[in-house]
Image (cartoon, rainbow, N blue to C red; front, side, top):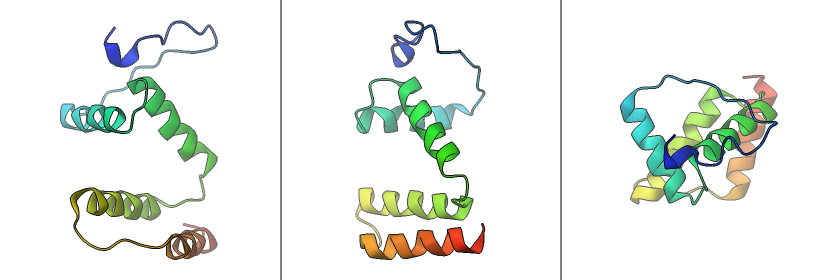
Length: 98
């Protein structure tokens, strides 16, 4: 067990799953959960999955837009958006049924 998943077996309500992803994606995932101060890789993945399940109407395009915006913000590239602009965009995606 890696330090990324430490504590996963402490909760009897938790079930372990196996997930295959490319090493480069795992490297990005690990850098992200650490940079965002999540306590573990597992907690970060649970958070991401929970968000995806709770917001199924949110489109794949919407997630890509957010990821691109986050990248631009982190690197200083591009422009930032106001919360009103983001809400309007999210409502457009939801209304369009994407």
